Length: 101
Image 1 (tube, rainbow, N blue to C red):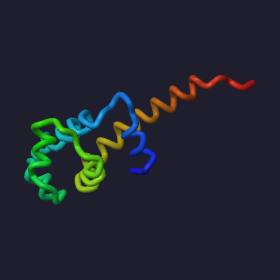
Image 2: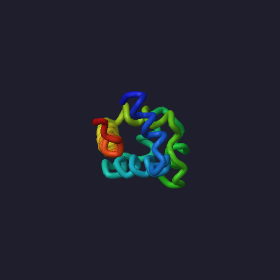
Image 3: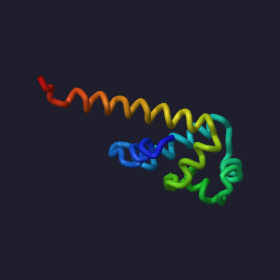
Image 4: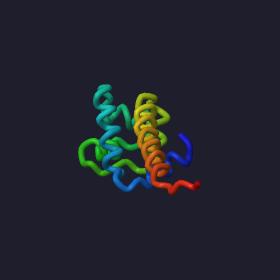
């Protein structure tokens, strides 16, 4: 994922960190991946991952690229959903530009 796409993710006004974290946690839960497994794979404290799962604290910015690197299905889901939103934003921007004629 490019730096430009990460910037778009972090600066989008109507999608906050908690929503992104909840989306990723649902993906992991559907795959049957536990908090201990995630903590072990990412080499981070289990308590930090439990906070994402159970206390809705939001994922730190450093952990988003790490989790996307380790879990391919998370990367694909996050990239596809944000690329779709990026296309919608681009289409809206093009239609709002005045025509030069």
